[in-house]
Length: 544
Picture (cartoon, rainbow, N blue to C red):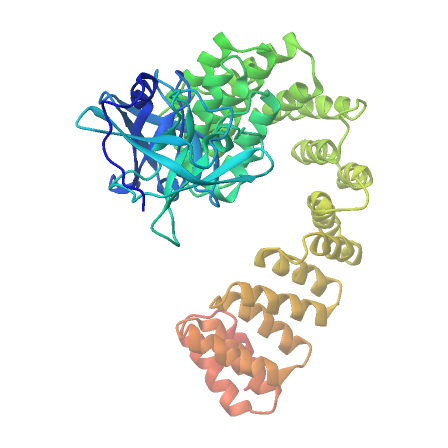
């Protein structure tokens, strides 16, 4: 063991100066309790820092306190590595940084471990016992000394005050290790960094790449992770780095709309209009937000946003740059205002442009429905919608087959409707609602496809357990196709789960009568009559 001591008087001036770059890191959980602490070192004067990664894992936010006692928030993490337990991050404020050593310290060379306490820098002089290289360019050191208390991740510097590495207590001996700070200093954020498992484990946002498209990718990845706190912070970072790009403002406004904070969202979008370019994108985004709020929110207190305002914003966008996308939103707003012929004309006009897509034909069909046009005109438009779908077909095409199936059902083309319903089911890989199974079952009954209908009723019941009306529908069909044993079992389940539902007793009585149990059947029919069932009297008269 090499004896080390405070060698304040003997330390070079550059070493003493480097002590000003040391800081204490403290990370916190969302409830404000401490997650972890560590030391670290600033590597420039603009807030770039290197420390241990471990305290950041699971943290909600973090602060640093520099050697002079100045407190600064950690605003983003640039990169991290858990194998070497190192993180590179940024703090909000000016800092005193140290230069990094450009060459390694050979075995036997002197280094100083820097720390500070009570506002005073300390430096422990020691020597390197072993130097190793990793990744062909970085150094790893073994240093024979006992780690002083609370010095994990303190920097080792050379005689020139240049940072050599961060101190890490050894897990296998009484020695300490040091990993080259240049390794962490070389961390660079990319668009995919936000998706790295380490960086996903903290709510502190990941640094924005300098390239706008990469930064947009980063923001999109965070949006998909479900951490709203981190997403908000990421949006703010994006806006700070790209103050004239509308995407950050739009994302924050969308968040506020989701929270019902419409006045705040309006202020964000007005700010975007004043700062961002191209202007048409901002006006379009604003129009879309207003339209979504008016159409899908039940809020009636915030009256500044109307369909007229949405239309005005999108028309402004279109006047700046006449894109079909903007015309499409105009048509949707006009439809919502009740001008179905005007909306139809715009939807159809768009089908002659490069914007042509199946949604336009579906929307045109909906206009025709509101205009009470012949059903065949609607079907022709829905045929075009299906024909315009990209092949091979995916779930994107499913709504158009469903819409055409429902329309064929409406005009009595039941078997053709079932074909479209089946295609919808196939494209959705079975991920459909119980209402769909009931709808298809009803169509199959009309097409006299009784077994298929019974199967669909059963699927609807599985997805909606405890619904006596669905079970009554199936029981009624079972009686109709003479599956009387199944009908009796179904009726018993109905009576069990809904003893006050008169239809259960009616159906059981009817199934009993038809299976030869007339006496028991009439008793259940009378019970249904006593419960107020209007059909029971006629059936009792028929079978008594």
